[in-house]
Image (cartoon, rainbow, N blue to C red; front, side):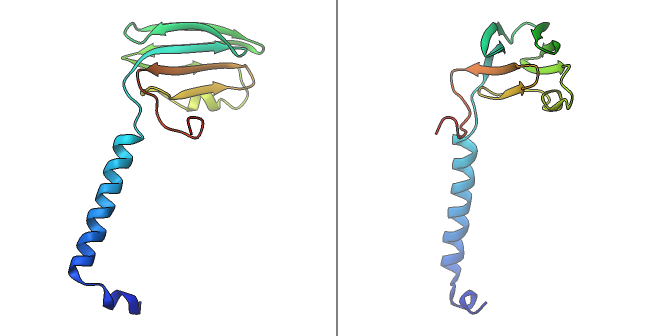
Length: 124
């Protein structure tokens, strides 16, 4: 902790401003834009593209059975799925463009689309 004694008040201010700028840029640049549609896939192929502006429930067939996708209040989620572990159901509501819920055993997914996607390693 000897190095802490060599840091002056101006250095602390510079560190604080750098940390705040980094947090602000991360929040601004890594946020997806507003979503306006849900892209529903079954078996790797697009099953349907539906607007988020209309509340609805959509049933999608997969190898294990029917998955039910709920769209409500400009959000989408997989509400029910016959997959054994229910990971996609526990994912919850998707709200921003680029978010996706995938049910691998049943080969069903829902992705939100919009003008701007959320940054992730797939976009890198």
